[in-house]
Image 1: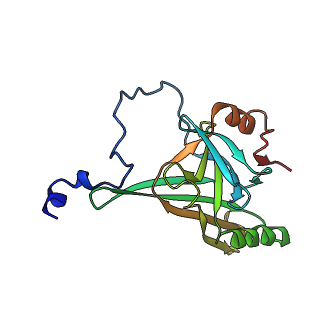
Image 2 (image 1 turned 90 degrees about the vertical axis):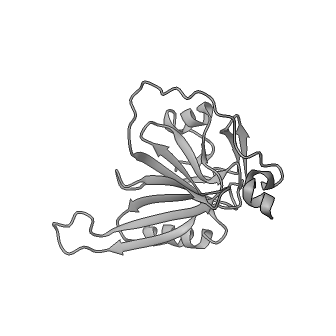
Length: 204
């Protein structure tokens, strides 16, 4: 017990080395654009496997698993917050948020699908302001075992014509996990962002 208190690194779980070796990090001298432009959502039961090559997702198993969501412009956001737990544990909290409109039957159908899919879990494909695609809800530590779930839905009519956010529906997906989100590799990324024909996405 005393040894564990003095040298906690000796008692890491099997297979965990404690850290990757640090290397030089060189900042890219290029434009860095904030925000996110697109969101796609997949059910865990449909996106059945992910292939990771050199820290990037190179394939997703499933028939067009990621559904396009026409979110309101500049409403999509993703935050990934890391937190130290004790001495050796690291917890990451992901939050994906976006707004949709208007309230109608099709909107209810989409919301009910999120509610029904949430117990099993969801994955989000986020296109950030730099045109890089990230899969949120999957990571190399937990694999598919700590996916996103529906964290909240907020619909307000607003109080009149002057309220810009009236009759919009704010949706929040969230999870807690042990690993950072991974990007798509360049081939998949280009198929989503540039050509718009990625087979991992359902476009229409």
